[in-house]
Length: 253
Image 1: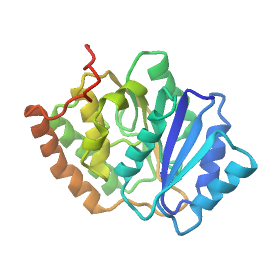
Image 2: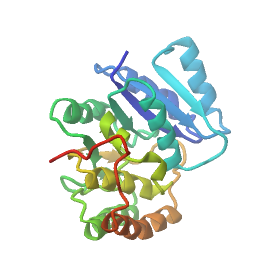
Image 3: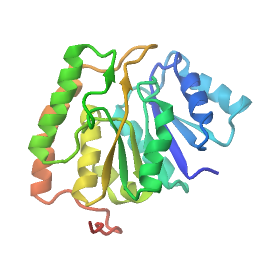
Image 4: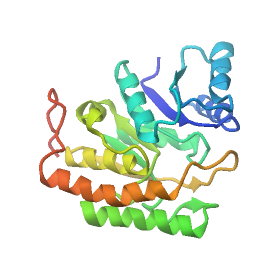
């Protein structure tokens, strides 16, 4: 049994899914993997099922959903699945190798050994560590994070990062059913909620590499949700609407 699980949402990732699973299972640190597949018509789920049956039963898990329901709802589904079991460290990670599996142990150590509650694989904590992205997308992402910091006063340089480790208690404390955003802004909302609730956050410098295989799911509407969503987040904080679950106490810092 592992104390850690990596949640990987997928939609049409047949080129990447087996490679990323094998890369994670080859690490010295032992992780479990939960794939959340939103009805991929390309056979992504079938690849996972084959790997479960032939090699990785008991450490590779699959949840299948009907249709594309959004990144945020996939992660919320995965968080609840993990919380219903005994995992202490719960990770978010993309399937397309934009996040390097070799960085997983570094995020784990930030939480398990250094005492942080949230560890973020950050593209911007030490400059701009992005490879093979179009310059326009780099600038949009970089300045989007700056905008979020100005509006929310969240002291995180990579607010939209999707490579994250959460301690169990963070996800137990955040009211997951009240997380509003489904796309790009979901990542901002989760970090901001953890910050408002008093959890300790660390950014761990990583290099983000644009996908080599498959098709990106990014589009301009995702950025629009983030732009207007952060104003709503700030208002919810001012109005006291970001609260811990009823059975949890806000940590002291």
